[in-house]
Image (cartoon, rainbow, N blue to C red; front, side, top):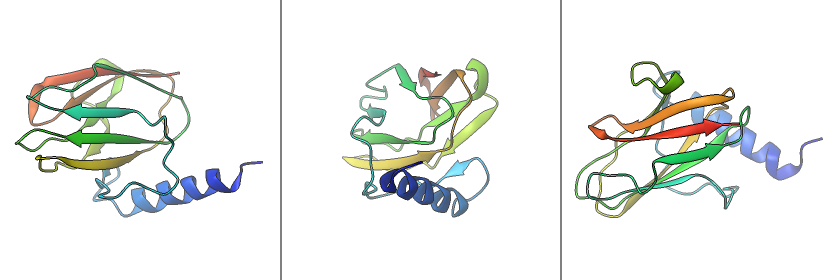
Length: 131
């Protein structure tokens, strides 16, 4: 049986996803959720590049993707199916730089390999593995 913190996280993710602009869009939360897992995948955008080009997450479980924008320009992170950049399974909102952070609630992903990227800067890409 799931614990109280697991249920709280699931309720939070459901509410965040229902409040999003569309089925594949996610609000960039401006405050860290109280139930944030300290091992949440994290990216930093700086000098038009991500700090990591590989991320690993658990398949079949929603997660929070933490994105710090230390650039002077706006960025986002979207996740695309099967290593493509044309079939999004998650599309994060664009947010400004200069030291801002967004917490993206990402729905559960099936096991497999995905591409993550900034939709504004095509060279900002990486691989996300859900296993």
